[in-house]
Image (tube, rainbow, N blue to C red; front, side, top):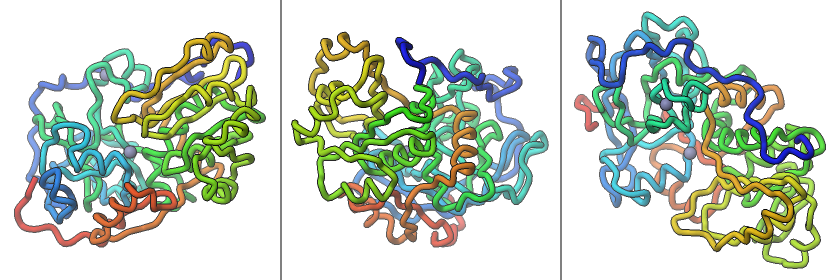
Length: 393
Ligand SMILES: [Zn+2]
Ligand SMILES: [Zn+2]
């Protein structure tokens, strides 16, 4: 990081996703196209159904579309919340999944940057307005009109259909939202980079973490383990905060340089003024004030986990006396996600995964909720049942 900087600067590199902004307005009618393809999938039919076999209709590729045969899809905690209706009203049936890796099956007539057979990925976004200031800066995740998530969201450019995610054998996505998965990355282990990876990479990049910086990571789940690996690859000294002594060894195995038991006030006091930036991945409400005391002058704490209720109050004094920043961060834009994939390929960074079959999905969800996974489940889509003759969604 740059010493003395009051707030982290934006990314140095201009991020532009779309070379033209004269795309059809979201309300314009979709171009004429052929019949949809039926794809096997797993999803929820209600908040209490669990995951069941479904068949989803994928649109025939339009001129800018890429049709992808999915090989793997990571299981994100968001998928559990969404399918169980824990984040508010949901449209069912719902096929979750936004950590998609597969091969291009076909491309639309205007696509020249992808070809059949290419290894590609799709993360949490499949569209955005492409016109607002955020989108023009390549920050589609912060689209001022609301980004189009990979599942469970109205897709204005496609007749207001509800997007359906990657627990499926195929998906059709506009080329602007398709990522290239570099050679050398294991496809199953790369899948979680599309959400867990970029969610932790983006704030580390925003803070300009470099060789010798000290990065704290709070929580050692799917996000936390990626934060450790990526921060290490950036050359940082990494300190993991955990509430469980049982995780000390695992943290060191992942590459952490130090581990601090966060419920031990003496250990926390010992870390006073030692850290430049903290990546907090814990989604349960927790007191941040002890963490602020571990930050150096001009330090920052990025909160990535979204708790279901308010957190204990932050003491302004802690922020004021060290010119600290308390920030949030949401995934990353498309260009930055590509940058992250290239970075991970260059540094040999992937997720630690346990590959599961379609039939194991419900058990995997229960294990995720119980914290019983090291560190990410990934669905092998070859284990999905054949598609039926009629679409459920
Ligand atoms: Zn996710
Ligand atoms: Zn926008």
